[in-house]
Amino acid sequence: MFDGIVLSHSHIDHAGFIPFIRSDIPFYASEGSLAILKAMEQTSYGFYEFLELKEKFKIRESKREKGKYIRDRDSSIRREIVSLKSDFKIGEFSFHFFPIDHSIVGATAYVIETQEGSIVYTGDIRFHDLLFVKFVELSLSRKKQR
View 1 (cartoon, rainbow, N blue to C red):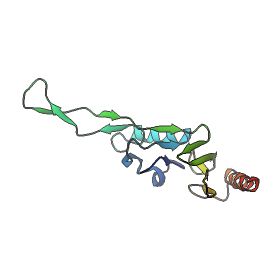
View 2 (view 1 turned 90 degrees about the horizontal axis):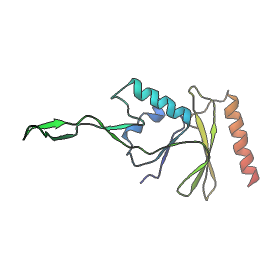
View 3 (view 1 turned 60 degrees about the vertical axis):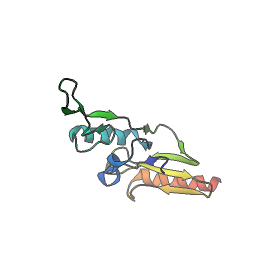
């Protein structure tokens, strides 16, 4: 069982399988990543359903003609989406998020606090950007403060 899914950025190699995640599993992402996923969803209607799931192939009996079945129009399925505005918790884990540089808007790195220690997740690594260097420095300073 999953308590939540955390997205680092909206490149397809990180976000491509979001449409296959159960709609009742919360999905956490930065506002920038959510905006890009929404644009991708709107420009590829029917191909990707990142944020708004559609119930396809649902049929019902026609009210006008007995014994005839018709396909319902795509009805929406609510997906639980959390736009990152502050640090958050999933279960017993505390998440601290940091914007980082990548080749796409909204890229985010995380420091995840556990009972055993901290986990740092960057998504992808690019050593030439200042935001990534700042993130590493902040992560190291948090460790020294413990």
